[in-house]
Length: 246
Image (tube, rainbow, N blue to C red; front, side):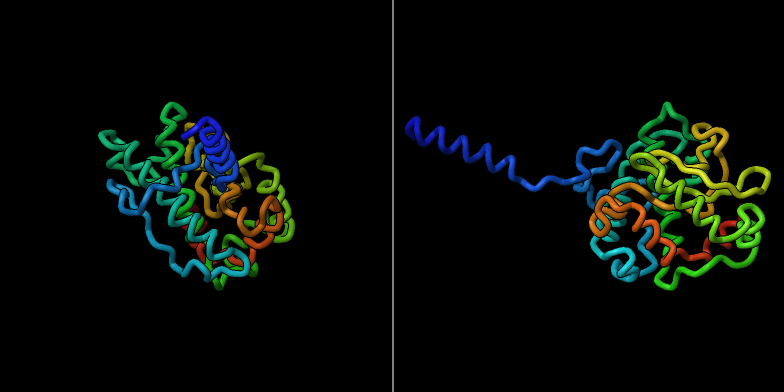
């Protein structure tokens, strides 16, 4: 190859690398690797299948986002959690016990364990027949604490919208049996009492506000995604979890 062709080839390769499609989440801190396959799940924790088809929540949550979110993101959290707990006392704990005992000095278990617990709860709260308003004891608790369901939605939406960067918004029950709204960064949650301190409690409702939860359909419009969430929220599951937490 002469010098002219060598330089031409080099410039072409460099240009092609700049035009290569970029995974918009690849550089995000704490985001698991998309290349982690389901077959790599080995250990005490497993990824349960969704209770509905990936397209069952459309038009509110799209099929492709659900596939990537559950089958890849959540799967990677489970795989990495199993690696992190191998040979430790956490390997014999339930995922709830892991959350209660993990500290800030155990980042791999904190991040991946939180990712597994948070997403497992999130999937259980979604339903093609969701939406509407709460009933039963949780409805009474919301009315007592916030005055009305509309006011609760307003405060919860503000908490979810205002969470800077990636994280979650929660409705939880504290040690006194009282409900409260909070948000946490990354994959933290209210069960992590050694990390969240005064915001500790048992979550009964959680909303994922990481970009990977909504970016394909809603792009940067987090508020639109949060609005859509109310149409697929399974209030019967929230009631079940609230009664158990009480």
